[in-house]
Amino acid sequence: MKIIKNSFKGIKVAAEILKGNGTVAFPTETVYGLGANAFSNAAVTKVYKIKRRPISNPLIIHVSSYDMAKEYGVFNDLAEKLARNYWPGPLTIIIKKKKSDVVESATAGLETIALRCPSNIIAQKLIMELDRPIAAPSANISGKLTCTSPKDVSAKLKNSIDALLDGGNADLGLESTVVDCSIGRPCILRPGNISLDEINSFLGYEIAFNLGITKQVKSPGQLLKHYSPDTELYLNQTKPIEGDIFLSFGPHPKEIDGLTLSKSKNLAEAAKNLFSFLHILDRLSKDKGGIPIKVAPIPSYGLGAAINDRLLRAAEK
Ligand code: TXA
Ligand code: MG
Image (cartoon, rainbow, N blue to C red; front, side):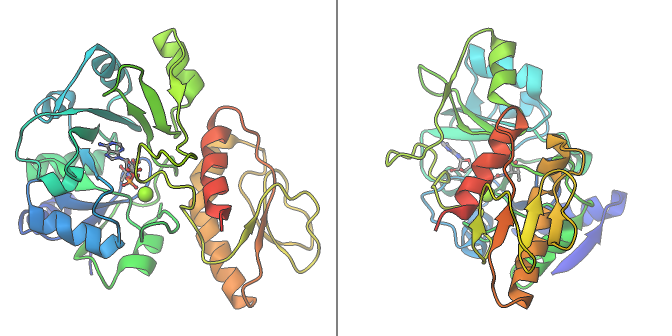
């Protein structure tokens, strides 16, 4: 794996690799993506293989503007309203797919397409330099911990991807909110940095929330077990004891190994730290013979809903 520094030249080098059907991990404001040229079946196939992701689970197609997105999907009124308000930013919009050069494998043969216009400037420049959309799932092995830093991407994928475009740590730390606008009654398929409350208050009415914790999984990636560290997670733990590994929220208790997601109980800080701290504690657990990680309760309002969604799936056996 080639490590590419973020610079004018670096972005050109990364785009060349994508043009040649290679795979490039790149930063977005949410988490790192594993990018492929969305017009190349060969490149997209590599992404599914590297991630060990079922080919039935479609990828998000990243664009650099709303105008570009309109070439690949049919924007109804709601989708347009959301895109105009939240793009560029951490919102993925699912709409009916238009006939285009985006390969069928990228959308898993569905009649819908997931579009996202990231606000991260490096991601924006990379898409513009490639002059094509980038198909990108999160840069991690399917079902395992998401990567929000170049270090974690490298640790997990360095032997299987062509390059890593280093853009430092992701600003937000949780994947984008996914809204399905392709159906009569729109719904949130994945909670993320833009909360349900925020979307509801922007729209002026309540949209549905489908967490996919039923047998009828609308978003194939929303399986209950997901985002998993190698070690076990015990949630809602309030009384860690010496010898435990504890992921706390608020001041970290003395004499206990671990980290606090946010000393001041700030949910945005906790979201940003969540995956990178789970990577660290997963390694610590291995050093200690595989003991579980205990996690403090996290409030469920606002961003807490998305944090708890990730923790619940990560803890599922
Ligand atoms: O923040 C993010 O969204 C990151 C960055 C890299 O953009 N990407 C990301 O991709 O999280 P991924 O593949 O880990 O998650 C995409 C989710 C999956 O649950 C997938 O099943 C769902 O979006 N998805 C994609 N296309 C879909 C479609 N047409 N219908 C329903 N769900 C779809
Ligand atoms: Mg993912």
